[in-house]
Image 1 (cartoon, rainbow, N blue to C red):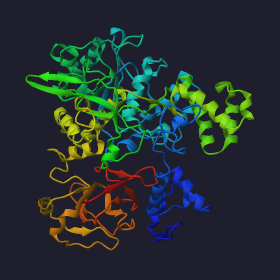
Image 2 (cartoon, rainbow, N blue to C red):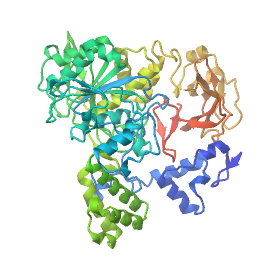
Image 3 (cartoon, one colour):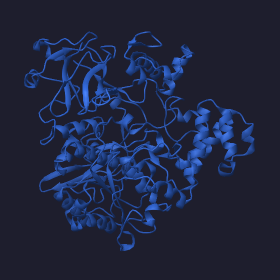
Image 4 (cartoon, helix red, strand yellow):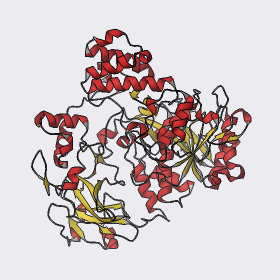
Length: 626
């Protein structure tokens, strides 16, 4: 065993190797009290949690962006957290599923093979080092396989196929919107060090370009895209199981009279889930294909770029609706509320087109800003001086105060809604819908037998109720990606059918059916044989690790010591256990030892949507037994 360099407590040596990357504010707090400590020294999870807790109490309860001059264009709550939360920080997903083997189709105005759509993350790819010359950037990206299975261009009434099409590699402005929806759904985080990774980061993609050369997208052109998928079962040829439609029709019309809605119904009948943006009118007014009964229509919420937990009602009630459209779809004597589900629709990071001049400019400004944030004003001035021909900030910046440089940078960044070297903040149900579509792709990877109706049912069934919001607009609630995948695994045909969901308190009947011993969650070696009469505090946990040699439960209740609370392996590659917890809140993860290398790693519970800040980039899973 090793010792924590801060508190001296016992730490497993492999775990100490996993704790060398605390977030910058936590790192700063530690170094204030331990000047000689370096992140490479690591620290025990208990110390990291304690410093994280201290940091959370220094956050402002109100956004800080309006307290600066010039004001920034997005909310943040601590000077060292100037940016947007990543998707998995907003809504925890199931990290074991990435959409691999499933293809998602998109209907949009145009696309680009963004670096985040690559097969793998390639640390050697430095796209920003190139200028924005279309040909040079294309050459750099073509050398690396991407996940675009086919590209379909239906502009001007003609049909063109092929990933080598000029329009796919174009710097035209209408390429941006489809690039945004595909990367938000399925980006692998290449240009953001994983921060802006999408839920379906290994899914296949089928982008279908629809509309007119001027960027408009009439309803008949959207219909042409769905018609192409239906024709000759093209959806089946490319393995499409989900379609994302982030564009809308021309005028309100009963769904049974609208060809676009009828095409959605036919695609659904053939086995494809169609996910549709509700629209951004803020009115009771739905445009096709949003009213189609079988479509999963997605509205939006505004989380104010604020951290919150699903098990804290006061924090949930801070969520507000986005200005999405809503309405009712009538099927016989039944009325279907639209949207059926909501997802984050504002303060999301949207990728900048790599072949646009804006890409290079914001890369330079972002580097200078990050240098200032790290208190390295000399480096910031050097960057601005080196790239003066591009950013054209006055020579006075060389001698200006740090605050003057900061203000000058903000004035240049704000019009572009800058949030990252390679991203700007975006909003609309156009970006909410891809989050739901990507989750559906994860569910299909977990259980390929799911029908569109089952996918839709499980997505709304797993949603977090938002009873404080207007009933007509909130749908069934907020998307919960990890819980949706957990339900998919337990649906008929799923590998975990009949098993409880991890992180939940179980009943006496469930315990008897499982036939596994109850163990005490403590820092002593596991002790079995706890009386069934104490089931009010019995929690079922499990994780899918088919290649593991062993899996154990680690957490705040046993000083994060691996091996002391082993899980049992099932024939399905699922490891599980039932543990008696004392009252209170408990943080936990799983310690998974690889069957080939023998190396251990700690992983979160993908099925439990409740996470607590850990001091690291990924939060700990939480149980709070009654």
